Amino acid sequence: MASTRDSLAAAAPHLAESVGVRSSAAQPRLSPVPSPKDTGRRPVQNFGRIDIGQVMADPTQPRGEFADESIERLAKSIQEKGQLSPIRVRWSDEHRKWMIVAGERRWRATRHAGLPTIECYFHEDQLAPSEILEQQLIENCLREDLRPTEEAKAFGRLMELNGWNQKRLAIELRVSETRVTRVMALLKLPQEVREDVDRGRIGARAAYEISRLPNPAAQQDVARRVARGLLSGQEAAKAVRKRRGKARRKSSGTHLTFLTEDGWKITVSAKRKGVYEEVEEALSESLEEVRHRIRNRVQIL
Image (cartoon, rainbow, N blue to C red):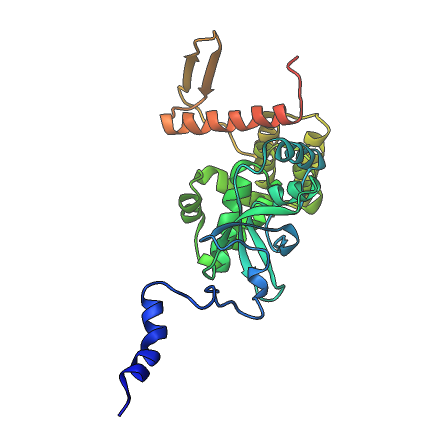
């Protein structure tokens, strides 16, 4: 039978531990070989800073070109004010790196600025290809960062992946059906004309009108005249109507005038009766043309 002394000796370590005495400092158990996806990360839920070398661009993202001047400006801003918002990344087992879902421009600028790390939001769950593309479209084309043909191809891929029509795409991306229709019309144009659209030589409205011509030769003819400044967007539309042989409708017409507080007068007129939804579309088209001219530094004569 064990003596009282033996029983106390056996219980002593447990008694000491129960009052907080430790024979050695407690150490967390760590994996002997960390996973590559955790290298350089801080243990913060979803958000964290990571070595910039652990991040790579997505080779399938819709945007293919980044203006050097834009990257340079953003790099200087990041150097002076820091990274204002994290980029979004997902893990790629194939490349063993975090792949960018949205924020490649910020990533490029951070690298250009020479910074060793970058703030990220880590998508831990697996993302479907359509989810990735949709986020990239929202990040890029809805901020007017994509070239028109890149946007058109991305729209087409998203509709194919999800089985959407143009109306559903417009709803999901929260853009107008008119914009989707015009963007998709670019895919009907010859490659030479698409390149002029991407370079800003041909505006979106004119490109849409040109796409309505029945054959590539006619499209290229009108496109060359627009690219050389011989035709405006409105004149291109008239040239297209003339080539298609459409007769003008006879009606009493529509004539509306809107005045701004700054003294500007905007007039909307048509040779047929219309509704305000059509007036809204016409004003949207005109606004796109004005923005195109601003981007290309066209002066008002």
